[in-house]
Length: 417
Ligand SMILES: [Zn+2]
Image 1 (tube, rainbow, N blue to C red):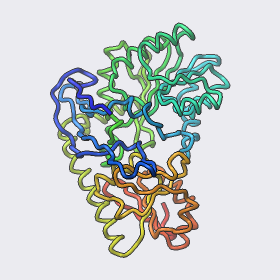
Image 2 (cartoon, rainbow, N blue to C red; image 1 turned 120 degrees about the vertical axis):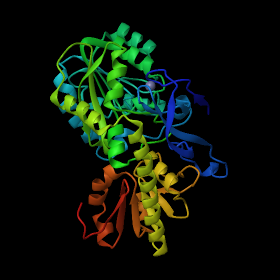
Image 3 (cartoon, rainbow, N blue to C red; image 1 turned 45 degrees about the vertical axis):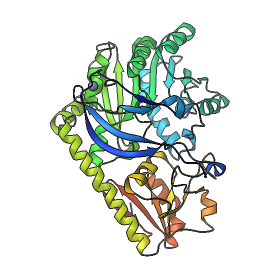
Image 4 (tube, rainbow, N blue to C red; image 1 turned 135 degrees about the vertical axis):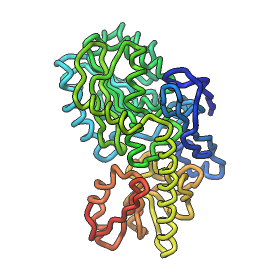
């Protein structure tokens, strides 16, 4: 595992940084531990969020080599295992991809995972997925979605153009935050995208994180936290420009951004978002300092809640062993002494243990034999799905606790969402 210290900002190259929040040392959140490795010490790495004072991009400057995260071990996130994600991408395709395409067009997805989005396009268009994590790429190929198991680079873009021609649409969802070399990405996109084509990306949104005091997205494989303003300045360097954008409900508020090479007019919702960032001062360091305080309060509020439940003698289990949950637990100082086990529907996670704390991950069925008094749901975006699914648990007197920023909500059979 290799630490990389960037010499400058990954969007503008300047090296005038200020610290947004120093989260201390954390394990790599996607490296669950097997039973036979429990006696080993799990490596932990510094997690310090900084902001570039030139272009204002919020980012990790010291990072862990992505090859180690995606290829040297099994990357455990299969998109299709996530509840509701296939529906989310079906709607995404209808609303925001198909309107830009004609039948037979060539569509490339960067970070295509197991083909959860491309499966909705392959009947009508020529599709190609790109994903560096070999096991998810293999899963996509098995499902009939051609997928290249490599990182997207300018070199790969050149090869794809040689073989398939340019693409009318390039899609990239929740993967750009994982890239250290954003300039190479944009050179590749610019080369691969046809002149009248559209580059559609969805990434974390700094505006959403600030609004909700959400820090669950901060972990080692998220290198950057984006605003519209930083994208506008950055895209210009590659002869591209954003013309449409909106904030989706995913991950507590994600930025869906549309870029082109031509001069098509910007949409009203795009102009509104640009204006909102300006009048809220989203891209200022003052906002970053307020965010730091909000995160500290949110972590403390969750810790207080968990300690209060333990003081009442209640057993607590985690629901969904996801990366973002581990960041929340670590920041709140909640560990194996508070959480008896996690339940998770993903077979790739069951039977393994969370890093450092070594909390076991079991199936929901196994949990039924020793049900907790409280399920702690650390992914607020899945809370409604889980609450619907857990009606029997609630009817039996169980509670579901969900942190929404510093507001901790408790759901019982008597409460409604
Ligand atoms: Zn910068």
